Image (cartoon, rainbow, N blue to C red):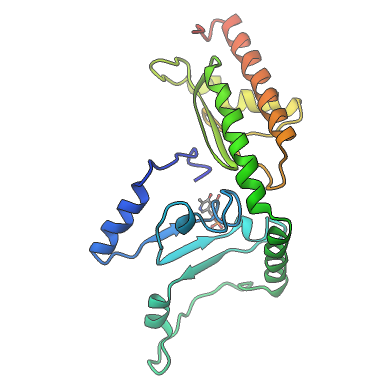
Length: 236
Ligand SMILES: Cc1ncc(COP(=O)(O)O)c(C=O)c1O
């Protein structure tokens, strides 16, 4: 999840969970609303990155690159057969007024065509590795408790004490402080409590990665100095 703070599961964790679910015949639902259609350099993360085959996948955002609103729930043949096998008189009676709107579906198809034609998955894979490396350099700065990044999903976590990882009091509003400074320098980073979460567009370039990292570095150093001057941060 982006909004949950980009907590990257330890290697093998999802696979083990999926195997346990399989053993007890529990359906595995993968929420790929954020991770599908390119953000991690693949159309879907479940199979290509985590080596699991979900029974149900939910998807949205990248499906149309947000140009028009569209979400989808994809389920396996096994589930489909239970719901709609011919001759059983069953149906999946569920929908929204605008479900499957043809204009949004056309936008999604064109979006997928462009992702393929412009090789955006390969682009995210390559530039995403660079983003991971460059963002990690912020880890040594004051205030920075952790940097988490996988391809084009990234998060910088701020702490009052780098050793204990103690957080700032809510009223310091550290995520928002750094975000508003970044915004004044032309960079948008999403503030969520003590986090700045980033979901850059899939066409981000290496030069823009440098710009993001250098702008964020300046903002972090400036905010650290400001908090130190007002006695709200002891420095490390
Ligand atoms: C991982 C994840 N799942 C689900 C949602 C909600 O999706 P929707 O608004 O399409 O229901 C979000 C929204 O940000 C999300 O990040």
